[in-house]
Length: 510
Image (cartoon, rainbow, N blue to C red; front, top):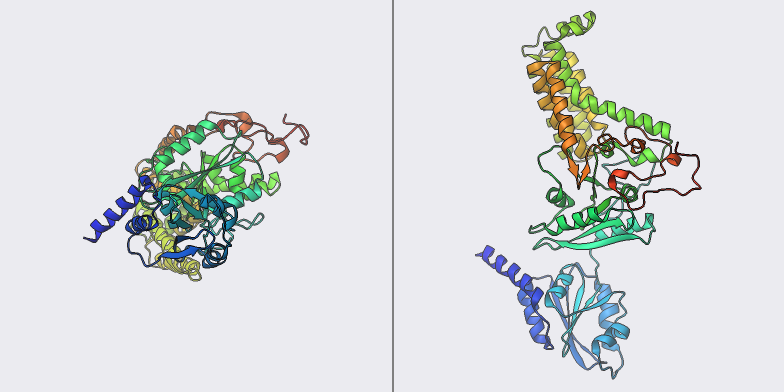
């Protein structure tokens, strides 16, 4: 019965989008109460506008609208205003009666109620078939903090919050370009979540912008609780472990991608902003790469590439060498490995799977534990479990070293979603090594490369600029050229303005 009532209420609210307001105050209030239901937080304040000699009513949500703004800048001015002979009450209220920074007139009840549910107040006046929407938002917001998932040694410390207007303001603060465009959308039949598509007009490819907007407008869901919902609906393909859209909490990272011709998608209620299109190499770049000198940034990127290889290949190589190709290992190392495995009752594939699954469980448990003790439990748990497993003869000492290096390598990735993809691929790679040795590893790597080359993100090849190869775009891929040589934006994003710098730039691009 309760579900039927909720369904009727939702249908009633959606039907109000087509209801035109009338000049009868009580009739408009009755329709509003019918749509919003008997909710304790819906406030209806009736009062008299002395200057107009008319009765009015204010509808707002307690806890979302600021009580001080309503008392001081709405009720008090209009109730104490002197008599006027204004012919148009709405024009008088907008021009002189309401000292509120945003006042909009609507003639549809649905628009008024959607604004009320977003924290605004709706003013209905007797004899007027228009409602005034007043900016009275005053709900609690989280302050700007440093992103925990994308910490940097050198760079800005501010991150996005859960309020969309705070986030767009942070982008505006860093990018004072009049060509910056923020297109507002509403997503969700019940949630009506505010979504903003942000891009630089004249830099971003209009076809990519239109495609992003089209895919977002096609989303059919009750409510969007986080930008991750949008990511799953608009990505090009779902059958891949690799992320096709990047997410970030850093305003500087969003601005840098906007300047390359990409599109940013902000979602109200989420501190994570989506960046599209995305290519494979950008998931292993950090904003810090551009704040340090290019030699240091290049070294760090090479270290990340090595770490990525360690995270995927180390357990598989251990299985392949110990089971199929011991002749390729130096003699002393073979003797040490054989001595360590002499008491292990399992084959190397079982040993590797046992330790890797244990590490994944410890990693997940440390994330779910309370902040202060989570990392401690993860480190202590790994040490205790590893040492106990070696002493019990379940795994060999070198296997513990391999798993530890593999786990450390996966932590070096700046992107959490990209690191998860490597963790997923590690297990089928181990199975291929157990079946065919080094041949299995090579075959699986070839399949991964073929799969990566087949992916696209909003029409942009995922492996660009390596395939298709563009020489002048490689300067910001696995290494980073000096900033004064990066005069042009990446061509694979088809930017409208391909030039980053003017003729006054230092050096040449030869």
